[in-house]
Image 1 (cartoon, rainbow, N blue to C red):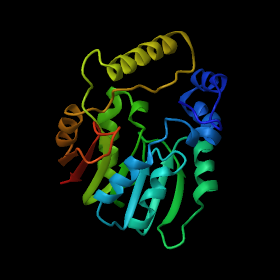
Image 2 (cartoon, helix red, strand yellow; image 1 turned 120 degrees about the vertical axis):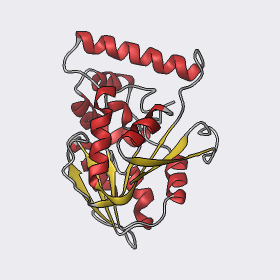
Image 3 (cartoon, one colour; image 1 turned 30 degrees about the vertical axis):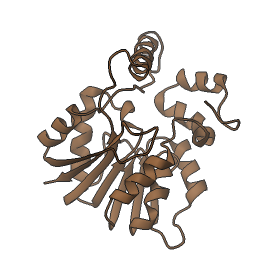
Length: 235
């Protein structure tokens, strides 16, 4: 499951007993060697489906994997994350700009309190929705919409809930139960849950907040065939 250069069990346990932000600061140097990083097959698949853009924002950018995949398509990209450690890794790996690619800016900030207004024609986010509690999802979507220019697109990957009692369903529900118990007895809380921001509920949320939604399923190779690309246009 884990790369030899990835975190040990004890390093993961230390992360899990920290706050969300501190946990990712600790994990950052080894994050790209974990299964938590969005696979390249997903990132390149999304890049193929997105039209060229002028300005893009990658929310919860982590170590910059999505920014790397999007660079050839645009002129400017902002990577936003609340973890200084993850941003330090992104800067180290990608720098401020790439040869022949988009100029890159790294911003430390909260995905629930983004300062941008009508600035981007594309917003993306990968592998981060588990850090957003269900009660905060409308606030998050409104922040994305506010950051987009009229007609801009919010692009992300999600799936439908797996079949009840399937392996994926059992893993996600068991992990979530353990995390709820951990947060009830230990402080600071660690916010990370699976089976969140799923279809069709997320489509209904986006449409309620002023997006028109296009869903593209069946575009990713195995073992990611359950994943679907959501393209939500700010109307």
